[in-house]
Length: 443
Image 1 (tube, helix red, strand yellow):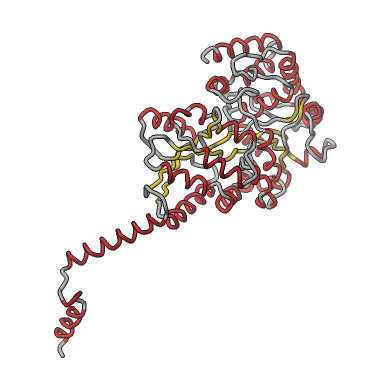
Image 2: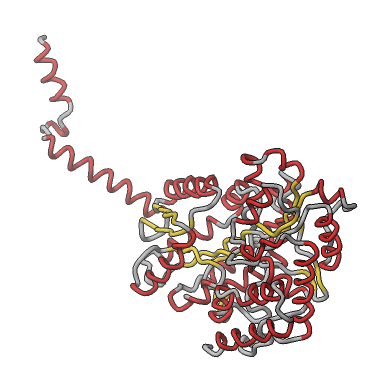
């Protein structure tokens, strides 16, 4: 049989029911089969829409974003619902969020910073079922988790985590002045700070235009001494008090006796640079100094450690940036978005993501305080405890637009900065009181 005859025979054998199939018909048939197969996966997922879009921030630690990409791919394959992450600069996220709220168009899931669920509650879906399910399975939510996401009894977002801000310090220099561990109170820190400064190892807490470090260092200090910007009603300004006067006096003394003078001009990166340049011994920061030392100052890794913020007369507090995941009301994939959020915050996924961060992120479900990831490096273990101490600007009132505005205007930071520059305690508090009253009058 000729080669030509063999080809004819093979073609004939491929005829369905003995009738030839054209190339066009073959492509149409296989495309239909692929669609049916895809639709079968879609039906098996038990969900409706086939795509969920997530808008989030581009993490300082890129490896954490890589974990999210891998998890999205895994979820897409398993559930038949494509999840697409878009990562953008942190500073662009509030603008993008506001634009989506204004236009009623954008991602299905949005990453919200700190008081975002309160600011945009009118545009966010009720996801109480997801949060109650996670809380029931994972030992409940921390106080800060509830504060940021539960708006007037309704969960408008799922708390995703906080970027733990702690004391970062040099163990070797502390030992030189007689300390094996970081002091537990602000008064003790002042005594230690003076000893360090006398040896040429000043402390440093940002007092410049530092939206992160400046606020995150000074709100906890205010609260620890019993100071507060307003009462629990979220309306009555209460900054002018004996407790505030005590903490302002303390901050001035810390600056005069223990601190590097250039903190008054520091931005959010200044303390990182100063610490890595061995110009300061103590500061308040995320674990980013510790990570950066691995590459930029490896000799420092062995002498860096972390501690909780000190206690004052009113207790121990912290202020760390919190993030949560909300679902927009305009989303056409609400059910699918909620299902993905619950999956993402479950241990198999969350532990892997948190573990990649080397202390960058701490979970807001109580379960994650005892996650095995914290046992990998004793120097970041303290980060797991920070969520229980964290409060938001405006405390003891719940988060609000007014408290957020006051924070962005540096009212607390500037109050301390003026004192450190020489202004009297009562005068700087009076200025802060006037500024707070202007902000809270907008309520």
